[in-house]
Length: 395
Ligand code: ADP
Image (tube, rainbow, N blue to C red; front, side, top):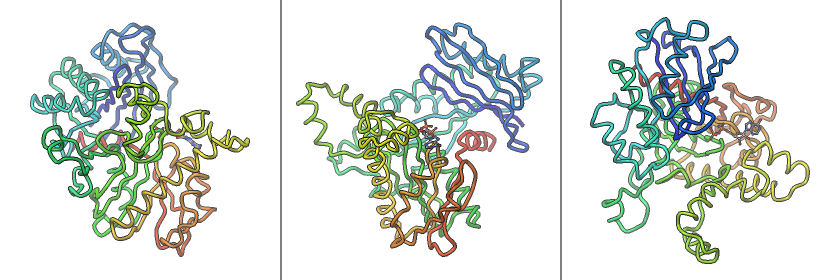
């Protein structure tokens, strides 16, 4: 039972093949610069050297054809023939409010992904291209769409509505959707298991996905109650290059002062803000931490602001859920950044949060980070989005 997982971007594509009998990874790879000069595929079979193919690829169909060739390659492949591949799971960014779970792709599903183009203009078209390329190359293999937004569909209206004129919700579907849903679902399930529960019933969990893109989710009884990203992945936490929450009135104010169009403002907020914008150093937390250690005050300010915003949401979500049983750290910074984790948990005893410094000296593996007398459990869980996509696909 082998499943191919595809995460298609506009000019790149990541993939993995998993053996679902034991959920082991067989190979993974990356295709870069699809449709532009210098296209190449880097394929890594588990336990073997990397295999690189540099060859022009005019579109996603060319790219996926090359991936399929690599999968059955007699030296670097992991499949004897394509018949061994049971299904393909695709990460799709936006399912609007149409999909609450993963679904087998048919014409109607594709139409809905298309209808959500305005909500995910960078990702949804690329995701659909990936699906259509696979359909063309593997017409008899089922394709499954796994939506980034689906897990958040359980949010109550009081969490997902914006206090704008109601007609914008009705006419243009303007509301909070939330992203990183597949990640947060993996965290909800894994955390529940670590806490001795099968379903997560009765548990209040705050999942902190802290990477270049970052979001928190408040998960009550295994379902999302609130999340920090919104209509787009810009809202909420301060991120590598994204500003997160700001006064919306700052947008027309800056646009007028700087003579920027709304589109240019969008670029400023998504690409030039966040940790990069404040520090002026980098969007990468490692670089900013190094600069702060060397005495760069703006780098330190960027890190302090990031931590403050995470604390802000933890406090808010504990209040919204009427308490919190566990806080989970995950993604690049959440899994590796012990200094940031410690800073987030500092002075939080009033909420029942006590971090054990020794336990916090860990990276990249499932662990408890709290003291024995901490009311709130602190967990580290490495992300595994591809595994969730593969599980959904199999199901
Ligand atoms: P995304 O998938 O959103 O691109 P990741 O989850 O891969 O992001 O996280 C990337 C971020 O994690 C980077 O900013 C990186 O600096 C940070 N990170 C990775 N390792 C460490 C580390 N050892 N210490 C601090 N930050 C780290």
